[in-house]
Length: 382
Image 1 (cartoon, one colour):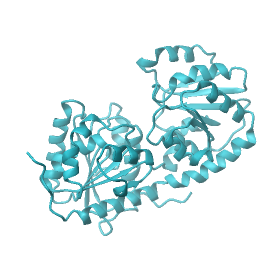
Image 2 (cartoon, rainbow, N blue to C red):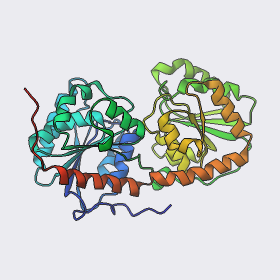
Image 3 (cartoon, rainbow, N blue to C red):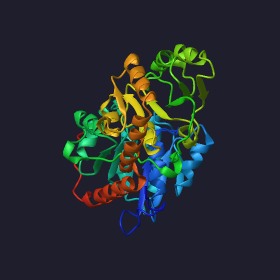
Image 4 (cartoon, rainbow, N blue to C red):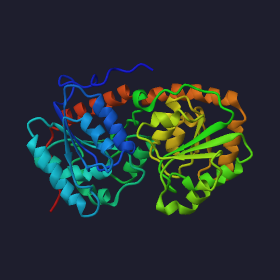
């Protein structure tokens, strides 16, 4: 997998001189991890980032390391949205001589960015990672429509495109698919090892949306199989019952660890990855597993089907069906040749998520947005 060096994608000659990035997430979930990867690929461009301060310093430091200026803003929830809007507007005004386009890192960020875009007549590129349309974005739909020539939408999957189109925010023709970037230097490139048990990994938040509640049943159904579970997660208050069952399993069958910032350490301990999600817009875990040559057993959701190339790079089962999930896992555990074949197919599929191509696509969209931002704006009715 060949990649251009960091900082080699954009330059002031091929794109805007400055971009204002707005993200609403204070943690290091998929949208922020993707933003950090893109920012690391920009060269010769002034990168100003507005973000809520991360609860863990290492995540905030990662954003700071790839920004020319990192501005803390209020987390835009409830009444915090108005405060965040004012903070982003103030930041845009301070950098008005260099900022040519605003990058809103999802749909809430679009709303947070709108006052700055209107006041300074700046185009917005929205990179949609959402699995649902926030209520605040639906309320802002008239203003979004009135600035349709100043707003360009991209999203990490066809699912996000359909979501935004059905919400009436844009048309399919004006929406571009730009997947999350998966950086081999960060995610790792696993070297296969030999073990007496096949190690099944679960990585991510222990939420029902992520299908964590299926984990205890699958562990029990595979209790007689030669497997060891590697669970990288943190207890979540709404899944107490599931956690009790997981933690009650003998330690020789289940290992529980916090999800580490260096996820390459987690993938190095896995032979295959289990993704039982009920809701996803893309699924970084699945894509990261592919890059590491790990076969994936995942819920049959449209975004996961897309990441896994319609099942050619993984095995799909009906979402929410623990029996089907356990059956798919058992079959794969018993078939090392199929695991190897899926691992090779996964590495090939992961080429589509390399940061160079993703960052170049966003750079082109920035340039297109600034080129098109010439027609007069129709102000919304008062």
